Structures are given as C-alpha cells and as structure tokens.
Image (cartoon, rainbow, N blue to C red):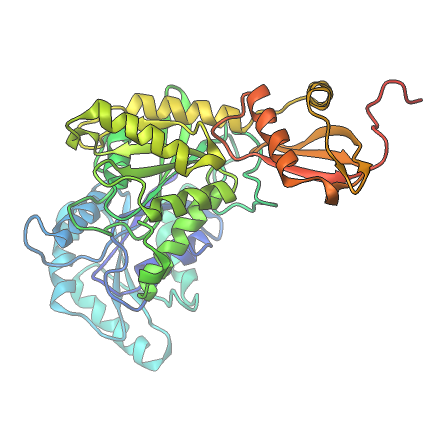
Length: 465
C-alpha cells in the first residue's frame, strides 16, 4: 500500500512547484500570485525508488467562517487528516512568519508525522534562512529547492521510513490525463484496467463542481456562490455500476476577449487540455440561461476535438414550467448544434441530485456509439445502396466513380471513401453521404469524420483476382 503524503504550508511557499517536481509533470498551476491552488489535487509521485500518492493543497490562511478562504482551509485540513505523513513547507528566503507558527500548531494537533521542508534554500540567503525553521519544533528541516531540484536526496532519506519501496506493476497502473495522444485519438477503448475519462466543462458558475460532488457522493470539490472558484483541472477516481471512471472537474471557460489575467489563461489552458485527453465531455449548461454564445463555442470545440458530447442542463430545480422549457431546449439544441444532431441532453440538478442516473446512462451509451466500428463489408453494401438511390453528379461532363469505403479509425468514427476525382465531388453530395451514414449505422449525436480520397480499384471486390 502506497503512503499518502500531503504538502501543506502558508500561501506562496512553493507547494505546487514541489508537487510538480515529485509527479514529474506540470499538473498543478504555478504562478507568483499567492493562493493559486484552491482544491486539493492528488498525483502519483516517485522519488528515486520510492512511490507514493502526493496531495497538493491550498495555502493555509486565517479566514472568517463561510468565506472562500475558510472553505479552502477545510479542504487542506481534510487532506491532513487523510495523509500518512505531512510535508510542512516554509520559505527560507522570507523566513518564518506568524502564520507559519500558527499553522504548525494546527498540523501538530492532527497527530500526523511531519517532515519539515525549508523550500527555496538555494544560495547563501536561502541556506541561512533554512535554520530558522528549527523554531517550529518539527526537528531538523530538510533544505531544498523545488524549482531547481536541489536537496531531493535529503527528502528521499526523510520519506524512506514511510514508504515500503516500489509497488509491483499491476492493473492499478492506469494512464493519467497527461498521456500522449496521436492525431486527436483518445487511445484504445477502456477495459477493466483502464478507467473511462470524463471531463466536466462549461461557463463559470454553471454548477460543474457541485455536479461532480453529487456524482461521487462527497464534498471533494470546492464550491460556493462565487464564479470561477475552480482553477486547476482536478481528477477524481470513481466507480459507477462496476465501471471505473476518472472524472475531471475543470475551470469555467469564458469568452476569449474577456480573459486578461495570466492566471485565468493558465486555468483555461488546463481545461482545454482536459477536453483533449477526455473520452466523453459533459457540457454543463445553466438551465436559467442556456445556450449562450459561449456554450455553443465550447460545444463546437468539443466536436472539433472529436470527443463524445453529453449536454447536462444543470440547476433544473430552478425551472417552473418544465415541460415548455424542455421542448424549447430540445428545439434550440437541434437548431444550433446541427453538427451533432441527436446529442444526448439530460436534465440534472447537482444541488438535489436529480437526474444523475440518467446522466451517467447517457455517458455510457454515447461512449459506446463513439467507439463503434463498422466492418468494411457492411460499409460497401451500404455504399452500393446509396449509389443506386442517388449516384454522384457528373462534373464538367464527366461522372465521378466512387469505388469503395472503409473505416479508418474509431473514437471518433472516421471513414474514408475512395473515388476517381475526389476534388470534384460536391460538398452537398459529401453531406448526403455523411447524413446517410449516420442514419444507417445509428451514429447520431457524435462527431463523425468522412474523408474523400483518390484511389485505384476496390481491393475488396470479390471479382478481382
């Protein structure tokens, strides 16, 4: 069993930088602005031959009850309670502050083993400042520089008593969100050892974090009436009816013209990355103001990335005339999103928990359609019927010969049709083929890619020798 290590300390002491160093990826957002991290983020860390789960937390601050800072502090306290060992970080260049002393006492009361880390200890100034950390009463501080990677051997020695050594490889070694993805593909279909990756996206304050908490049944994500609380894309491992799920909560996506702050740009980039690495994307719309221009731009982005899309109409508990509103929403969706006609749309409420079963059923169903593969023989029988009903038009007095079709990829379904003059085939006829392909093989509600290629005779023709 791998131990869980929580990184805690006051704001801007380098917790997220150390987290990124230990996981070997830039997962957590890092900026000079204090208080960047809000939700606690977990990752798989490795230091030499030691393997452990690492938790990045929000900076500990004094705050009034019911404020955002107080809710952030509650998340950090929960991380301390669930940890096997705590890394308490101080800033060697600034030295100890009253906040360091105050929260050192809070960590001491938790009863968890504590490793004192004097971060930013590079150079003469940092090295001298590291000695101040003795005042906290946690024993010898470990001087290191998370940014430059100095002092990690001393941290290794401090962590070794809490780790059992490397775990044998097994079915728990699953891909994280930062896996390599080729040509927009999401990788092989999830099996028993690979969880289904689902990203929750939408405008700020659409209820994404509340919906994630309702799905997993705990207050894992930081929520509140303030817009834009979530900054990092936070992943949660979960299981639904025996299916392993990796659920990603993301920062709200505003219109590009409104994004001026550097930190918000980093948050948006993290959300876009979560979309690229997801297999199914749930677009959360506020039922009181649905299908804003930004909602449609996000949906278009998801379709261009080739991801399976489910639309969650959140805050449904606030709607009074539900039958009329639902009819209007269905009509609006069909009119404004013709590129994914038939996309699943589910009424949910993260606050009351209504519609969660329907949402997950829609996610599993659309993922099955998104992963579907059609055999070449079926495709060419379909193509023969289509050509008999409506042959391609003659262009410049010459008829275009369509020879055969095949499915090049799945997830999303990608088809190639080979013909004699691909550049001359009218766009209207390509749309006709695409729409008939969707209808015949029940590929509605997902992105579908159809490529027209030039080629020689049909290699699947049984009459060919």
